[in-house]
Length: 471
Image (cartoon, rainbow, N blue to C red; front, side, top):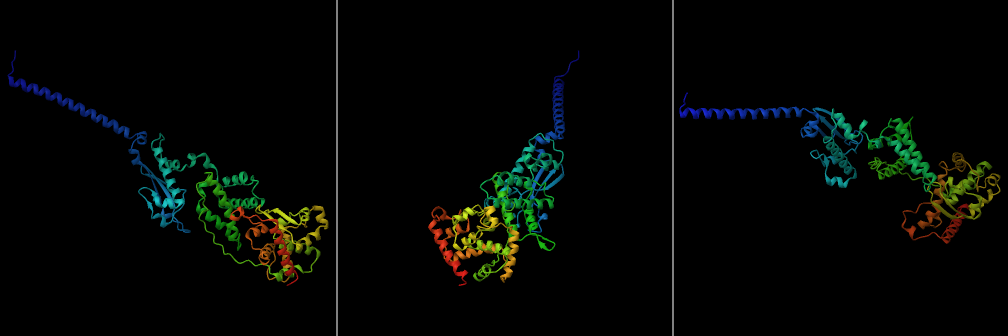
């Protein structure tokens, strides 16, 4: 039997303990290494990137004002979004209002927002901030979803709801939205006058031709922005073969109609904003020529053919009553027998009331036995507006007028006659002219009585007598 010294026994025990600890250390080291390798494998999984913060380092978005795309027309700057995914990028212009250099002084690239102060002052800036917040919220939802991202353009399409990611309501085109409002709301509203419906329909037709010519018929409502609104204005006023399509005053009226359409759609949350808001159309207002008393006297006493006399008499009735030509054509024999008129104007649906002066009654009496009027039961012969204005030019030339005579001169003449006859009460004047009093405070307090209308008739008779006698 071999025996060991005591010291040797201690050394052997220490060696065995040390060896056991060394093996344990290597075992732990290998386990840690294995976990790290497993973790590394997980890091390469796309699903892991979607669920962990590492994904945010690989996919990011940036919203920024692209000064390189500044408009040469209005010097405004558009906003773009840049999506970066694994080093690859995709950009797109955002459908928000373009901004000025001055407004950009309040832009923070760090927060990708305008200042709260400017947002409270300007509605369009508030909408921009809201839009950018919505994009960021959608991006956060994407990071926490199970969608497998394959490219930056895919992220862009998801955030901007493009292509197969577009929402159902965004498939409605701008024109279809506007035309639906016309057909389903405007045209079915019995309280809207025929003249107003006609004007709104005319505005939509101009919009259709612009969209068709510019190849914008398929654009969505949110894509019709301020730049396209400016293009539409230029389209209306551009010259064709050396002649403007229409005057600015006419273009302004058409855009005014479209603005009411879009305002209604914004209230219904079918559109985010009105691209025509803030659009300035400068119109040079010229003093329009009016008919003088001497010129009126010359027309009244003009000797002309029977055919031309009809047009002259129609014009004189308009001068004596202030009625528009379309309203004049609606007067029946029964209406005239009462020696007063209370009719709803075709253009505005506003009621006009007046007692007829003896000068205009004499003309109605003249045509009461006219064969055409007896058959139609109308107070006066009916003639088209085109023929009316054509014959009025001839009457004006025969009367030596310095300008072309049109139906518009008659209504202006009646308005100046009210003033010269001493009729100044605004509410009474509007009643005689058929102007709206909806915005007048006096509509709640002042009623145009029969006595006021009779007194106005007497004053007009006295004034017409004086100018008919050449005084």
